[in-house]
Amino acid sequence: MYDKLTKSDVEKIKEEIEHRKVVVRKELIEAVKEARAHGDLSENFEYHAAKKEKNRNESRIRYLERMLKTAVIVDDSSKEDEVGINNTVELYFEEDDEVETYRLVTSVRGSSINGLISIESPIGKAILGHKVNDKVFVKVNDDFGYYVVIQKIVNTQNDEEDKIRSF
Image (cartoon, rainbow, N blue to C red; front, side):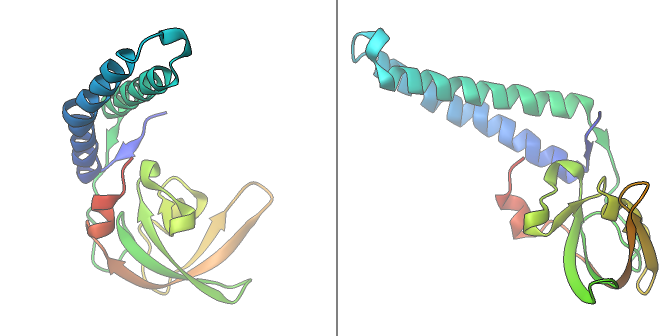
């Protein structure tokens, strides 16, 4: 499966890889050297912990690089009046008589707990490209689905939250 990423996502991943290679890698190599200097490696917890953290960083770098190699770049631009990537939408759930706010993002950034829904999720697939006041059927599986009404669309391109969140 290929991850769908925007150009902005790609840039953030490249920044994280660079930071991990230039800053974090050097810090962790120093931590391993310092722990090794404490003596007997077989009973040296600091050494094993430092090695584990160094390996975790290298694994993360490989994961991000593989993600970039296999990614499909998607356009995050959309018309002002239709739901697109990085838009915040207010949805009215008819069955529950509730309004919820979500932001539509690429699959690697989805976090429903934080109100970020993936374009690959059932609700993301259903609302993508629709307009305000559209009544949309969200198909969850062959036996279940529900309707939502798009009440509001706000274009939220690259705000502060994007700078904080890593992949």
